Length: 311
Length: 294
Image 1: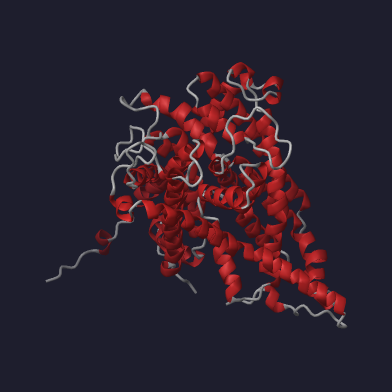
Image 2: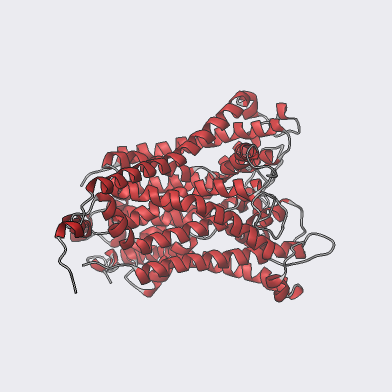
């Protein structure tokens, strides 16, 4: 473990033991510690507030119905609480996003890291990152108003709200994330590996694909999982363009409803505080939180476990 | 029995073919990046073409309306500005203090590790989950209602990890010789941080905060979850009033069936992207101008 900056310097004692000054140092240290502890507090707050309402939800609805049911109609007269339609919808839009973002993103990353001149990289990388700065509501607008009507010319039976355009646009949204995270992973591969391969007569393409890419694989897999987690938690694109019909289907042409879109739908209506409808968004929120948490944690673990260590 | 094979038939350099593969790959790489940039261009062109005609003084100074011709973004501009101010008033000091603590004060310990892991994890939590937290804690728990303040607190928590991490990076980039000199002259830890480390780290911290602010301006989902209004024909006068923001207005107009409202949404998107562009450009310029070389 490397010593932190703090470990290298004297503690809070001032020279000459000035009591007032020492007291001030202690006080400031305490305040700063409190501010830093906020990180833990927020995590605890998220877990507690989700847990409280989720427990209240499962007092009224059986966990078995929630986890095995295939119909989601909590706001209808005949209420059914099967989470699967929301989960498959989320999987469908995120899956389409990955199909777009992974091939494009990895190709772009290999190109930027191994082929592009430093000048080209300095222009292209920030340009690509502009995509990450566009607000998601703007992507939602783009998916519904521009992409869907365009696709309807080629795909008969494509509804106004569908998983396809939402997924495609989401793929473009997470493209810079896939690219920059996997490029970082490849940039961390030591040059000695490249030089070794060149010394054996490999071409640039062979070095990139057979040496650098495998060496950076753990970081690349982690990048893809983090991007998937971002897609699963993405809200506005799917709320605007994918619809609000919780249907158990993998057909990308029809309206569906993802977990996040359901939370938006309930939040926009006037569901009374404490009612079962109000509690459902916390139950769905907990499911979403756990899913993304597992993915994020897995990605961190994966990097640690499978990272190639050189030197 | 093994026959002797001339070495030349075992290994064929075939260099032309192998180089061709590389050339084809470069083409693929450039194409991949172009797909992203072309989409961005298409998006901007579409928004400009639809929205530019609606963008006039009346649009900026009118409230929302059921009639597209009379609708404007005044309430959303006030709401966005107000929420931004309160968000940064909370997030900036807390985030910078946390960053300073983690870099300059915290010894290498379990506690530091725990805080660091928590902050990294918070950065990966979907924004809509922060909305649920805000709904449970600020709107209900603290009884703030669906007010500007409840929205600002929620947003502050959302951008906190960004500010903490960029502050830490900025502080880490300050060379140790500056600290050595300060401590050698008998300065205390706080004197060192306040008079020497923070001034040097300032450009980086400023950039991080501007990035955090632009993230908060573009966020929609958490504010919908805490119940910010979609139709607001008034300007919020106190931080406890109900409010709307630009992204919510865009969402609302996009969701309407009439095409005129889609054009209005495009006009509002131009304003939103304009604000974000100005913020990000100023962050880049400030960082360039304030950067010191060691």
